[in-house]
Image (cartoon, rainbow, N blue to C red; front, side, top):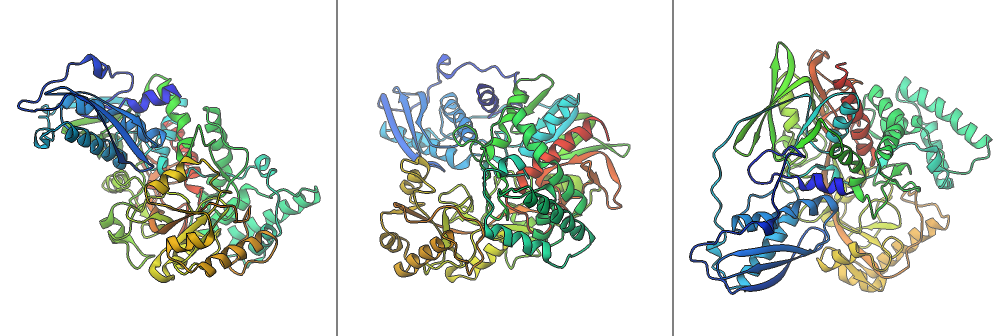
Length: 640
């Protein structure tokens, strides 16, 4: 854990490139801060609080008559990776004697909260804020050049997986990351990792609804030979499962393949889907070998279709962090593998038809990276690039700026797609863009609670009525939401999902993002829905838990609702995943327009296409980045 923190703190936020293990900075209290001419402050210690993303951020600022002596974050509720980033902001404010510090790319809400709180402290001290918002003059640009066997563009989940895999296969590696922290959009995900896992499946009993859903899938008319072969194989597997007297939830890689193919409306590439499902459990176990512990009980991400989602232990590996902790710890504890942050890759270098490096910028400083073996593009999707998603969109009536994005907005700009296309890469499925039903109003982010994932919650419209099965496909949910009055919905839960003392839900209530009530009638009044309708929705759901057939088709559930206090939060569709991108083969080699591999160029993660089809199953993205990141790293290291 300490190594993970050390790597994230290794930020190089302001002016220079960071090679972890190279940075040597004196602690803030060893530097005597400069004074600000003509600034007049009332000496003392001041505290202030501002709202971050997950809750209040409280800052303590100490000043004398002419300078900021120290700034400390004394309380926050941000997630692990985010607070490691914002912890650099106080240091920058003291160093520059200004709140106009260069913003770190990423963790925007949390950084803004720290700066806002420091401003409040200075105002309490009588500051003339025009003197404390002056930007420090930057140093002149300096060029730099680095060489490694493998250059990985992007420090999100797939990039970290590729880097570790390449290193384990004997390559030296440099990861080029444009944000001020690793993790990309992965750390803003729910962290669900889909993998057919027979041992963990034994902890979940198979219900009649599960059996009915499976039979429906196996008895449908097959779309093609791939689906037919999967159906036949799964039938044999399930018959054997039953013959052995097993009552626990059936699962297999083939069922995972079938549901991915079918759930993506047959647009996905069967070869890539098979690679994903066949290697998902091994990739999950690889992450466990690197030190991460996953929960024993399988969960179910929103739109996952089947209960096979692996989640990290909440107090140690929350949400998407479970998928990067092991990689970060590995990188920080090994030589010849490093991350260089705040560095934006801009162009692939091609020599004699082979990709041999990357041109990048660290602030105003040009940087050249030479790759002895090859380059892995792992820059994520383009969900936050409004112009790009409008250009390619074929599924939705509108994807303009009125629609939010759940991903890290600075990261999800499609940079890698643009760079690779410029050297001849083939693009595929670019019009297939997924919306998610769990967007927060105003931001599109998905970290709010109660959320749509998991169990023990219902979805109701603005009339208080359930309108869609809570375990439906994401596109089905989104279309159902758009058909409701106002085009939004409410997620309703109780203490079965958020036990008493849960700080996450309490902070959401404090921030005004979530409503809390002791009765159904009171909750209905707070959120403006009909109380009778809301009570009926809860009663109907509880009847399904008791064995009734749900008219909306819900097949996966756990506990009844009826354990106050109740919680509700408004949700609306948000751009979540771009299923299109660079076309790759099963070795993660990027293909040109004639389906030939481009020498020296590999890709993994959301930057690629042809895997998920028209609808990505919830929990398949984390499996994707681990499986194909691992393959990409091995392929580039061995120069396949």
